[in-house]
Length: 209
Image 1 (cartoon, rainbow, N blue to C red):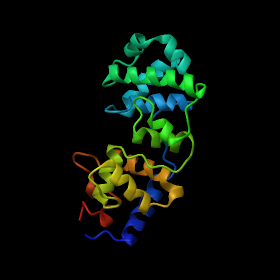
Image 2: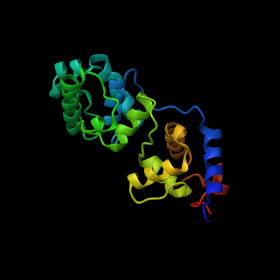
Image 3: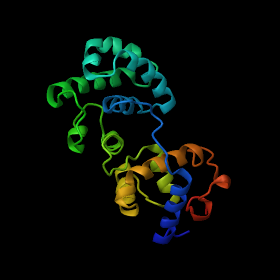
Image 4: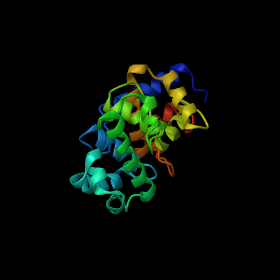
């Protein structure tokens, strides 16, 4: 099946109609809490991250409180989240940088975000989109898989898929479609045993056809 511009437009129309209003699954109440949650989400489910952050944020939900807690105590608080030692180090170092360089605030500049420990391109894009409402598409495993399967944006790397999505999707909708693709990947287009027969996109999907 050849995925034309018209088919991509139909794919986007169906995704928007199905998942309109979709929000992040991570729970947070500040830019800093979002940043910590996204750092923790690497190689970890959002469900598990929410369990960890509910516990952590009651004790420390600002850069100051993270530093006061100390890295050993921080490790204990997030121990049931994968790679907890590396993540604790990143969160602790990032908290220090935010206080020293940004007056405790999370920067709204993409390049500055990617300089923070534990913050890669995906995490920076999430912060830009969710915290600051700036056009950005974060490519996680769900977005990568769904985009390639649909043929909406194909690529062997997250960056290639991100660039493809930026071309296919109107800029003002980048942030929304990030959530649409994630939720579709979680609910229907699963990594193993995708629910193709139940999928509302099956007639316009390269993978299914």
